[in-house]
Structures are given as structure tokens and as C-alpha cells.
Image 1 (cartoon, rainbow, N blue to C red):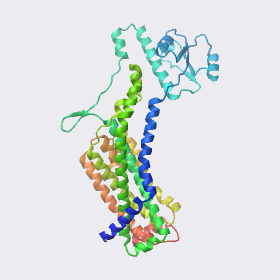
Image 2: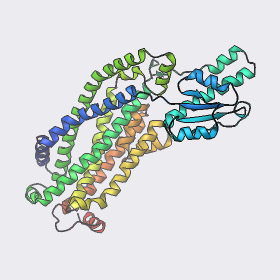
Image 3: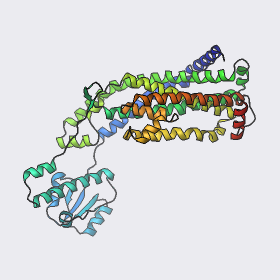
Image 4: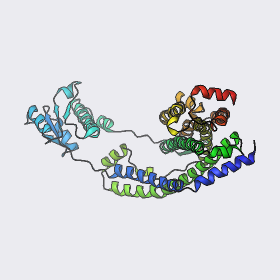
Amino acid sequence: MSLQQILLVLKREYMTRIRSKAFIIATILIPLGMVAFIGIVIGISVWDSDTQRTIGIKDNTEVLYSRLNSLDEEQYQNFNDVSEDSLRSLVQAEKIDGYLLLDEAHIAGDANAEFVSSGAGGLKLQSSIRSDLREVIRDERLDRANVSEDVKEIYASSVTLETRKLTQEGEETEDDTGFLTIVGVIMGVIIFGAITGYGGLITRSVIEEKTNRIIEVIASSVKPIELLLGKLCGIGALALSQMTFWIASLLGLAAAAGPIAGMFLMDEMSGMSEAQKAAQASQGIDPSVFSIPTIETSLIIYFIIFFLLGYLIYSALFAAIGSAVDSETDTQQYMIPIMVPIMAAYMIMFQTMENPDGMLSVVGSLIPFCTPIVMITRIAITDVPIWQIGLSIVLMIATFGGTMWLSAKIYSVGILSYGKSANFKELIKWIREG
């Protein structure tokens, strides 16, 4: 095996594709598209105006309506003089959005109140009514129990949790778990997209060269294993270049856009009452989230390591698929065994987001075919023991050796086979004879 030949193939793959218009356009437009998408999502969540709803209250207790009305006098309207049938007609005619029937059993007993509506308002309205109703019934029960004001304040008070992170050096720092969870998931999604995207590119590249019979010319001067390694490394270098540009662009744009979005949100919330600010915060709208905490250099290094190892493991398999078929439509039968572990890792990643130290997350991060996506998410969120990181890297390197050996056997025969796509039986035969 000649290193010079591998480098020649690598250079050809890299230079040919990096100069293409499609690559240049995609490299520039994707970061702008992602920033525009994030901006739209933030804009919708910040400036979405509430629609005024009207809820009819038929209160047989004569005490709950006044409490509800004091919470939102526009939403809760008195309909004591209206029969239940009339209330149903008003809902059907869309004169009101829904109604509540309240009686003593809701205060003195454990009966559940029923909210009848046309479905308008969705879950947000239902959640708001449930919260208001729970509060007014609790307050009425406390009044009837003749408890002291101190007890009422205890019930009305809420406890918040401020989190701090204690480092190995014994220093307390800001706990950025929420931000780092988002970063970890984004990194996992990027690796997931890169593996499938660039893997598909390798498959199409091999099929195209087989179709144009260019492979016969190349194979006459380069060994199949040299051609395979050069192609994987060339497209891998291309992927790394594109990733570097995207990450640098996103970090730069986010650093500039975050404070600006935070300023807009601060202005928007400056006119709100404390209760409204608390409600916005409960929905995850907090100006402080727009300031970007520091991302440790070690996390970026781990991202590059797991991205490259994951790419190499899967790209070898994608190249083998390309060499075994004559057209892209024939690749479907081979894609399922490859996509199953990738999709499994993708699903485990969301479980990792909730519990990074759980058994499923730990096991998933040590399975080489799942490691690139799951482990980087764990590293971003929690302190992963160094032996687990080291073991996962060793296992991935060993797995790459195995997939490379397997793919080289298939590739060396498949690239010069024409006429029909190979089935699994023929692939096993190629591996034995290769």
C-alpha cells in the first residue's frame, strides 16, 4: 500500500468537490439558514400575542367567581343567570370559549371541576384555567379553615432553586447545564447529519465512478484499498473543512445575535408586572439565556475526535454499499442495517439529555456504532469518567479497523463488477475470497 497514491486520491477528491458550486453554496447558505430558523423560533416565542378568551363561570358557591375574576377579570365572566343549556349554545355559537360549573363539592369534597369548551385555546388555556382554579379553591379552603395569615403566606409562597457547579478544584462556578445540554444535543445532531449526509455522498460517488467506468482507469494505477482510503480521507477532510466553517460562522453569528435578542426581550419585559415576568420565565423565556457561556476547548476537541471516528466507521460501510450496487435505487436493501444503529443512537441521545448518567446512556455511549452521537452529548452535559471516554475511543478505533477490513474485501471486488447489484449471499462470498 502506497501512502503517495492515497494522498493523490485524497487530493483529487478534496479539490474536485471543494471547487464545486453546490458545495460552496451549501457551505455559505446553511449557517445563514440555521440562524434565520433560530431567529424565527425566538421571535415567535417572544412576540406571540395572547388571544383574549372568555370563560363563562356559573358559580353555585358564590365565592369562587370573585376570586377567579380577580385573577383575570377579562377572561372569567359571570354567567350565574344563564342555564347550562344556554351556556352550551353560547359555546357552539362561539360567543364564549368555554364554561365552568362550580359548586360546594369542589371546595368541601374531592370532586373535580369540568371545563367544557369548543377546543379553542388549546393546552395553554386549559393549563391556565387549571392553575387558576387550583389557586382559588386552595385559598377558599384556607379561609374556611381559619388559618393564620402566616400559614396562608406559606401556602402562597414558591421555592426557586439556584444551581451552582462545584469543580474538581473546589471552586463554585455558574451552572450552565441547560445551555450545555442544548450544545450537546446540537453536537449530536450535527454528527448524526454528517454521518448520514457524507456517507450518502460517498455511496453516490462510488456508484457514479462505476457508472462512468472511470473506476477502471483509476484501478489500473491504484490499488482498491488505496483508492478506498484516499476517498474516505478526501471526503473526510472536506467534511472537516465544512464543519469548521459552519461552527465558526454559527459561533460568530450567535455571539452577535444573542445579546441583541436579549436586549429586545428585556425591552419587551420591562413593562410587565412581576407576575407576568414570572409567567414568562416559567415558559422558558429569560433574557439571561441569550448571553452565551463559555464552551470549553476540550469539548470542541472531543467533538472533532468523535466526529472523525464516527465518520470513518460509517463511511467505510457506505463505500462498500456503493461498490456492491449499480444504481442508487438498489442501495435501499443495504441501508437498513446501517441506519438502525444510527437511529438508535439518535433516540438514545434524547434520553441522555434527560439522564446523562443513566444505564442506557452509559451503555449507549460505549457501543461504537452509537458512541459518536451519545458520548459527545454526555460529555457536554456531565463529567464523564476519563476511563469511559478512553474505552469508547479504543473501541471505535478497533471497530473502524473491522469495518475497514470488511469494506475493503467488498470494495476490491465490487468496484469492477457490473451488470447487477450483489445480494447478501454474494457479499459473503466476496468477503471470503477477497
